[in-house]
Amino acid sequence: MGEEMREKTVIADGMRIDWDVPITLEDGLVVRADVYRPVADGQHPVIVSYGPYGKNVPFQVIYADQWRLMIRDHPDIAERSSCKYQSWEVVDPEKWVPDGYVCVRVDSRGAGRSPGVFDMFSAQESRDFYECIEWAGTQPWSNGKVGLLGISYYAVNQWPLASLQPPHLAAICPWEGVSDLYRDMHRNGGMLNTFLAQWFRTQVLPVQHGYGVRGDYDQNNGMLSAGPETLPEDELAKNRISPTLQGRAHPLDDEFYQERRADWSKVTVPLLSCGNWGGHSLHLRGNIEGYLNAASKQKWLEIHGLEHWTHFYTDYGIALQKRFFDHFLKGVDNGWDQQPPVLLNIRHPGERFVMRKEREWPLARTQWTKLYLDPAERRLSWKPVSTGSQAEYAPLTSDGVSFSVTLQHETEITGPCAAKLFLSSKAAEADLFLVIQLFDPSGNEVTFAGSVEPAGPIAQGWLRASHRKLDPKRSLEYRPYHTHDEEQPLEPGRVYELDIEIWPTCIVIPAGYKLTFTIQGKDFERSTISGQLQTLGTFRGSGPFLHNDPWDRRPEKVSGQVTVYGGGKKGSYLLLPIIPPRE
Image 1: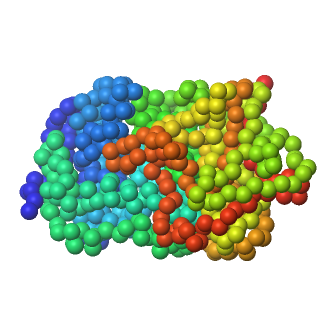
Image 2: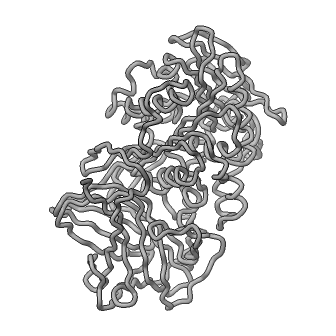
Image 3: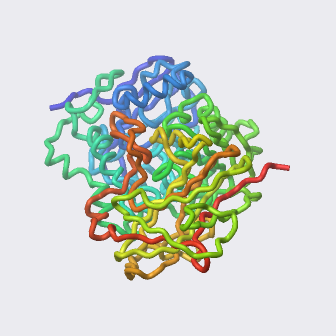
């Protein structure tokens, strides 16, 4: 059962729209694309997106909660557009075509209206993406310059694709997307991130090719978004590869992840990497690491706040994107070549941001500051603690141990963080969850909108203690880099020295506020509900990014009492990037 409607061209809302255009790949498989372009004939730069969410699934329909909140708080998103063609995490063509761009949305192999086997971020997907870019770059309506722009999935696949160097690829803008599937997404600190299971079930399966009449119709053309045929469940199962099973099957950073990783020496295209201060567990580290590792001579980093779907669509975000692409895809002399390499939206309590231009990351004027753990007093000390002490916690049944300091002066913390911890466990393993929080003088926690979590802490970090092995060539004091290539079980009772990465953050802390650093053995979650979204469930502080897989974190493996040491020769500390005012 299905529908017969295939490729069709219409003129509507000031655009020429080609629905369901076939793109034949090298192996003969045909993927489908929607093309939005100016009505008048001509050659234009092209913005391409390639992914699994359904090229013509309306944002307002499938992600109603996110759309409602976004439009309520940022009405500029709905201005100058009917929003009829707005889909999840891709550009709104009504805001790009009038400025002379062609927007091409491709359903990836196995998704939406493109048949085949869906295999997330595989080498096959990168090859398919490459061919779609070259197709777009050689069409009569193309000026031969293709740019990539999109959020999350549509950002993640830009990095490995860029290292393939398609001839017509002229610039990329990965907006809040990971660049290392192991460290940024599948296994934070070596622990399985269970978000992917929920994501796959709620955001990918309903638009898998062959879901057909069980899915949505495009209200603009009547097409089945996950059609045209409707396949039985057993056939659908054969045509998809579960990322959850992949994550469980690959606990170490092996060839599976290496195949899906960019060759950074070959990422030479001009790039604008845009991250989110609240993107812990998924949407921050990758943008920074991608920016730092790419060999591109023309590269920029921007970091903002709020939900990860918001600024992509606001006037702020679109203006930034168009300045970048106008320069590299149209050749407009708009001063972008003089743009400082780093643009930071400096975060203050109350979701207030102040834009600041910088020359590098981390900032050269950073004062790397150690706050030493004093377990006896449960405090953070600006000076080394002379007397040794210790604190214990039960990993699965307590909220760990916390250390605090009240700041006497306004203090800016912007950049990567880290911790050096001396600890022991009564078991052969210890899963460590590190959390940095902020409290006002009345004792109320000051939270921040994360990329998904509406009330997130300042920063988080993770490490499975058996994965403590460092790569000496890639590790920095402020950014430990673990190899994750072998497990080194703990000897119960023995004290180990661990270096732990804490994802970057930014906050200007007023005088009198208290900074708290917590070490615990489970995901950071409050007892109260902080938010809820239609597709992603209920949140309590870490959004949907949890590490609670019953097999990966078996109680008999990770429930041993943990002891944290500080002072004397076991001087555990938290390393913070404190930024002095500019002179």
